[in-house]
Image (cartoon, rainbow, N blue to C red; front, side, top):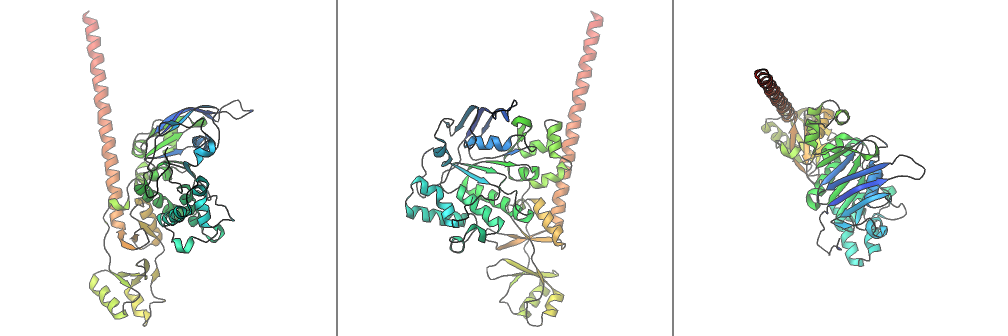
Length: 416
């Protein structure tokens, strides 16, 4: 794993686990028993399974925060089982629940930690900190000197991800990183991770107990049972439509068709344009635009072009020359990387049949409405119904072929 050069991003590396085992002293049964898997370079693999099944232990053995009792670990073809663990951890990013930031260090100092220990020059570290803050959607000028206590939970997690990426490692390990934040922030952090991965192509191993999160984020999911035995290791689509056994079915749970809403992104459906106005537009002009739009409401954008308020005709009548108190504040938005499930939840929460779609810096890009989402759900359900019918038809053909073969066998036997 060579050191990344300045201005040249390192993409993912393969990870091979070969008979990886962990037995804790004094325990008769292994916590992790003989796990073998190959993770491709640049893919997101999710470990999901019940509490205590060994998923976090398996993850922590990859960067040897927990030392394996047996087996080998290879990253990018290099056996790291016997490498100096400190050296290994500088090459593997690690993000945990509640970010784990050092409270006495500023945001910039937290992010700069590993590059500093690795001996990067000061100018390169400074440039890298700014680049990463920008990458995770935090304004470098605003957040550079803040302390963790001055950040929201979501902002802390973003800094945690930036710190994990600071030395540009090919591999990023994430242990329930979004588990401690509220659902809306969690959705946005998941979207941010998906967007980051489009740019960075790291190899990401991500532990969660939330199957919906696994479907949304993962290229492949490893469903683990006790001792980290792999029940199924496959794509989200394959696990949803063809679970390997009852244990996996139990994890998928009811409503597999609706869970497939987590596989379709907002960018895959029609985003409609909506009439918009800004705070600087005169009230009469806003009124005229609404009247000419054919819609019963208009979207007011703030000075940075971000959705601010929904304005209806009655709101404008009551505005009396000022928009300060008029309209309804935009309570939730989604990005193009959000899933249809996120969009559906936002639409249902808002109660108005639509949600605004925003870009990387929160700028307005369009609207997704209830009709579009309902049509997509119908299409998914119809696809599932056709798949089930096809599967049924194949089974019937197989059974009739077996019956036919048995009859021919029986006839052949009686002639003999």
